[in-house]
Length: 272
Image 1 (cartoon, rainbow, N blue to C red):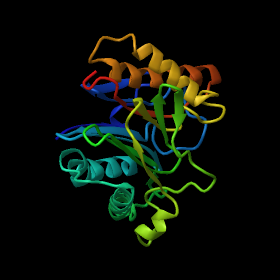
Image 2 (image 1 turned 180 degrees about the vertical axis):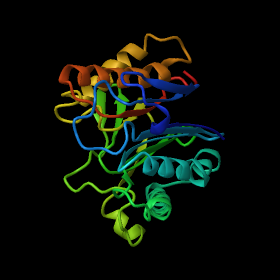
Image 3 (image 1 turned 180 degrees about the horizontal axis):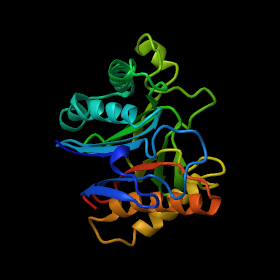
Image 4 (image 1 turned 60 degrees about the vertical axis):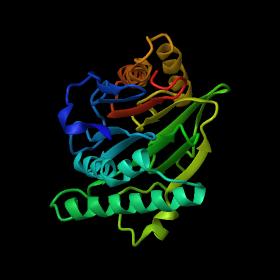
């Protein structure tokens, strides 16, 4: 399994976008297009990751609160055993089997955040998380999220958001007694991969009211159209960077910033 991780604490230049790509997977991260206008602990608290295995690909984004460490811990945990299993030896995963595995992995990530950061004399460290697993052989798209980070799917009909966050937004790092309690707060699902052109995960620096774009799905569709003009093998990178740049452009216009983390998978034409 091959992995990549962008940590917020390593990317502090205002207005810059850093990215990593391999074949059909790409991640991008930025501190933002303008200074933050809200109380925060660190300049960049977001993170993005991908993993590519023999059977599929894993992508995730995390939006840290109370510092960058919570997003790091959650992503590093998932890049370990869960991502390795999902991308190298997923087995036969029906919707219920995926739900059990996803909730267990999210709960373990929650425990890792609380164990490593809960005793610090600082604001409570928490993070959102949005993840997806694409299994081309099984033609399945598996997804899970806690918090308000987004997951968009590009299909022939256009771009749509999967399982958007409701009013009750939870975080990894909260006091949760077990996977059963997390099940009430997480959004977990499975979709056929047929007809999916690309997927994009992005933190709320894209969409925050008064900060990001007014129509997030429209922005993702614009970045997708631009990415289609890139050379074969570079479209995932163009898509991830394009979504981040559109978010930064909006932040500059609004004169209000937020961190932006993006993970993208280009599905149409494996390796494209």
